[in-house]
Length: 141
Image 1: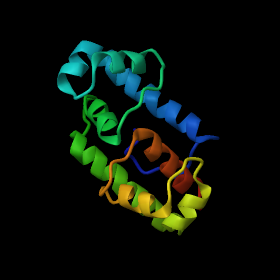
Image 2: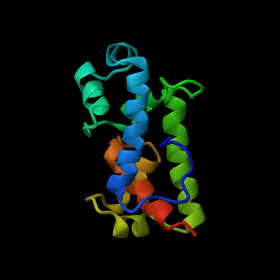
Image 3: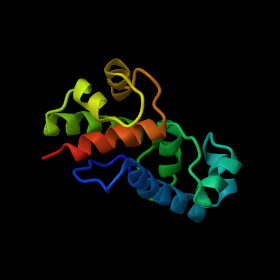
Image 4: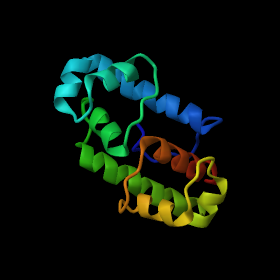
């Protein structure tokens, strides 16, 4: 589950995202796209694309809404909070600041944007979250 603390990551951010999307797709398949759409803010087509193995654009909040449909999972707001707190914890563990994260990112975010997104003061896409988490976990001792 993407909101858990990561200390290791696969070979690339794309592999990490695929791992998480497989988890989310399993939740959608278990619930059914129509029911999942009724219980989240996502369109049925987006959920069907996720189930089909596509990589739809999602926000961190939307991914949390899908994840929250799984049994024994916190609500979406708690998932987002936990995910962001684990990024901060991971930065402390890896002794990284936002400038160090920026220098390793494969996407175009500056240190100020990273800082705002990790603190929840700016919206974060699921793709951005995965890339930031990858850099942090990859830098962990």
